[in-house]
Length: 291
Length: 201
Image 1 (cartoon, rainbow over the protein chains, first blue to last red):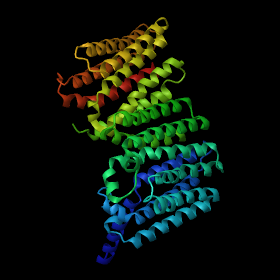
Image 2 (cartoon, rainbow over the protein chains, first blue to last red):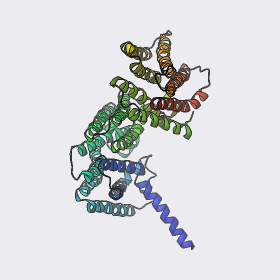
Image 3 (cartoon, chains in turn green, brown):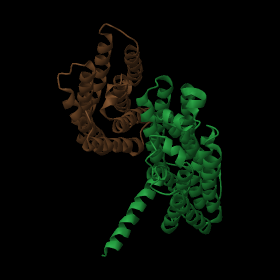
Image 4 (cartoon, each protein chain N blue to C red):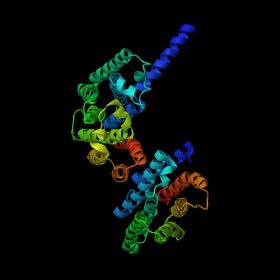
């Protein structure tokens, strides 16, 4: 291999690593898992090729919206300790580069989704639209209620998966979407409590800065109750086995106990454990609904 | 003390086994035993997940004593309900009052030895029930000999409870590091005994 070829291969791998961090692999992976769970929850005969192309298109669309979010919020990210090392915020990647790759991946993902199934594609596009246009471009810097729209966006992958499996939007799909929608505040609000100073420094309105910690904790508890109830009802309507339902009840109880602990015995540790547990809870619930 | 990857793996396996028991291992039983075992193994599952997330620091929480009372109480209630029909109501009352008593004496500041006595009584009765009942049933042929593993699990629960109590007492006769080293393996062994005992016994 010539020296020029070696250098260009290294540059490519560095770029790949930088863009990989831009798509927030864990968050994207979790949202992708909800999409797969939405598809599997139909408990119909699974088409592996369809499942694979669905996963690929969903992965691209979610990654595209995350990169577009990073593109627009590079200035906010640069002000926050937690995010200032992100390649878009630190300047390692140029804005034009991030925008171009974000749009390319978006077009590939959403376009592929539309080709697979128009309604599925529409739901995937709705997820992208709510995240990039409504949440990121329009509301994030204006109101703490922007997280509701971020939540709706996060609920689209599971709805998309369900739509692809059953061919339409129905009650179970909406309940599953509702579960994710109400799980998201549990996740993001505990995060905004943990990094309240960072968000204040960047001037991003959050629930803690707008309504105070107490109200935020109450909202976390309430949204956890609704998320757990939605998953439970969806599980019953899907017809999961009694044992799986018991397991969902056990895991939901853990989520509720931690949520109540944040209200009545608030501490950094409880807050952090709720944040971590909520992610694990969602992942395990998705697996259980797929069985 | 920092939790190692092996500790996390052992706790994950404990959680998986407890989850299996809740989802599959107690199918076909009556409502009360199913509820009791679901609570017991469910607490074990959630506790295992929290230990993985937060590390051993979570054991310093005052709620650990209360939570660790739920496991033997609910498992022993399930066993009594299944195998000692004439003691069902009595044991159910004991389990409820025992849990409330431990919770109450641990929630308010009491300077005498009442909280410790309460724990000793509740853990003692529940632990002996889980240890003796399956052992006797296995020995007299009512259940398959493998069911004795449930008794062994009960003995290990007793040991775990004892170690955690030492830890909470502040002056452990076994060093804290040793207790923390043992706990993940002990949890896994205890859960494995229960699951195997219930499945094959």
